[in-house]
Amino acid sequence: MYTQTVAQAKEPVRNDAMYDFLQMATGVALVLFMWAHMILVASVNLDFGGGRVMNFIANFFEATYMAQLGGPVIFLVLLFHFFMAARKFPFRAEEQKAMWTHTVRFNHMDTWLWIIQAATAFIILVLGSIHLFSVLTTLPITAARSAARIQTGWWLLLYLVLLPCIELHVGIGAYRIGVKWGWIKRSTREYFHGMENKLSFVMIGIGLITLIMFYFIVTPDPTFMAKTPIPHM
Amino acid sequence: MGRQLKFNIFRYNPEDSASVPHMETFRLEETEAMTLFIALNRIREEQDPSLMFDFMCRAGICGQCAMLINGRPDLACHTKTKKLPDDITVLPMPVFKLIGDLSVDTGTWFRDMNTKVESWIHSDKVLDPAAQEERMDNVLADEIYELERCIECGCCVAACGKANMIPEKFMGAAAFNRIGRFMLDPRDQRTENEYFEVVGTDDGIFGCLGLLGCEDVCPKKLPLQDQLGMLRRKLGFSAVQHIFGKVFSSKK
Ligand code: HEM
Ligand code: SF4
Ligand code: SF4
Ligand code: FES
Picture 1 (cartoon, each protein chain N blue to C red):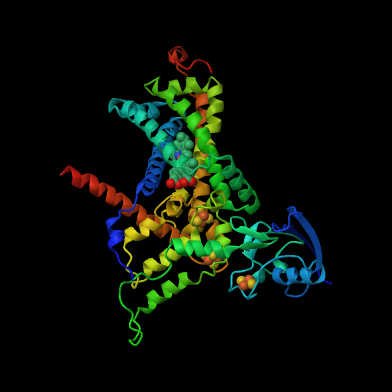
Picture 2 (cartoon, rainbow over the protein chains, first blue to last red; picture 1 turned 90 degrees about the horizontal axis):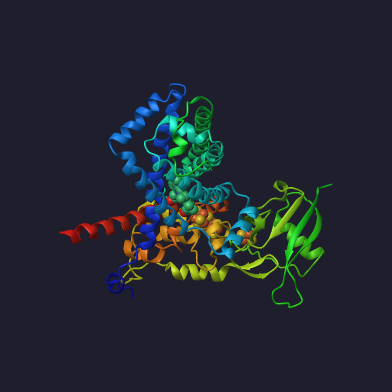
């Protein structure tokens, strides 16, 4: 006969649930941040590289201490997200091999997307940290300083790799959050899948235009390279 | 004359110490309305009587004949060769224990799964066999029936990246679907905590990567995606509420 007494006395362990929730929550926070970030940097295009709009927005964040505080916080969120998401990553060679064999053999879209997400994750961890460190150690953020950084050439290369990685990771991540938490249903999956693709393309496009603008048009801050602790890479 | 079909079939008999895993090629002329099930039977009858594979109902009901057909898990008996290219590769499903050639042991896996999720109605009501059965709303009965249709073929498990990664541990979509079925059933008196105890871990719903391999291959088109989402949201948010509830109440 079934009795509930034993089960009631025992509380379930909720750690895995909490970690998974935090992975999702930090993922959402980072996605929102990346969109806001895109608005800030792409605003340099609004006055065709003049940088007045971008400086205005950056100033606002500076004056309210959101850059000085928010920057390190974002870095912590990024690290935290890494620790949570890494729990799902197959670190054992045997598991990696099984996943890879399965992915190639099955050749299934969403399974490939996960491989892309996991691979871009590690690139973002390294390149994103370098970028964050450089920007936060050379505050304030101005269009001229960003231009100086990007015009060294090596930084341009870094951003050309980082940009598509971020946009793919974010696009796939947002779609998969929807699926995993049941906000995207069987009936709406196709629609959101399409949305995710288009959004990633548009974001990479805007990002590329912005990088071109910084590289060719925006006037760089001539004293910047002397100030940065990361030398001419 | 029909197409000449080329079958690349995985061969290995773990019982035979002389046997090594390898691929073997068979050729067959396609006939009208041929299924992979028919083709395999003809190969066994006409070319190699030692070929091992499972089937029972040949009608997509028993779930015995699941295998990887050009990489995709599906039922051999309902796969028309017409829809396949000339070159067909057939492998046994991963994750499950290999019995031989294309035959795998899904039975033990599903038995373990059913034990783990305690796949029966938990009730402390005493059954009176003479009394009329309890009534249930038609709409709800249909909803439960929709999830009951699982034939335990194992396709969803073979298609699951996570199950391939940790085959011994991950519960898989069939288990999530089964739990969803009991959660719907008003006769089952289990509390949310008790369901949580069963699936609320990284080997259960919180380990699911949302790759939807399961959803895309299920030959019975069970609503696996919607079940996964429902479970994660329900149990995930209940855990968050619980933990925050504790934090706030301990501050008082
Ligand atoms: C430090 C570098 C990063 C690493 C190592 C990393 C790692 C991962 C991994 C492995 C996953 C997949 C987890 C799973 O399948 O359950 C994931 C998911 C995700 N990541 Fe990242 N990520 C990083 C940075 C970022 C950034 C910068 C963003 C956003 C701007 C982001 C947004 C997301 C989102 C939205 C998801 C989906 C969350 C979920 O499935 O619950 N990640 N991340
Ligand atoms: S959605 Fe979850 S259960 Fe389904 S194939 Fe993916 S990881 Fe496996
Ligand atoms: S859920 Fe579908 S794929 Fe999985 S065992 Fe049941 S019928 Fe087969
Ligand atoms: S033989 Fe029964 S499902 Fe294929």
